[in-house]
Length: 128
Image (cartoon, rainbow, N blue to C red; front, side, top):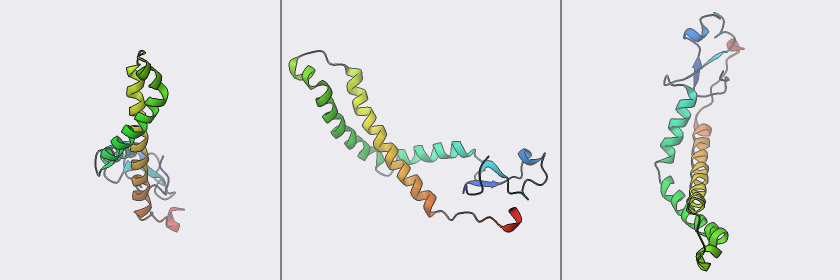
């Protein structure tokens, strides 16, 4: 169940609160966002939306190229220079992990900004 501080939750008005006629009086909130979506689904959609727009993919790619190249030189430089066998799975993962970390960091920063700029819902004395 969502808490009263969740900005996306709305007061229970649907079938989830049908068994408790005083649900709104005691401040029970419904796990449905104000847009009618489940809160987790809404968060995933916002995460994916931020992850694919506003320059985040480009910056994450640049971070992955720089960090992935350095890590690959450290981890498999001897195989590349000495003519040994190179593990392509490790090379791919060494580029993928910095990309994911950079994307996660940028998106979580934007989600935090979004949360902080939204007005927090006030709890009236009637709901207590």
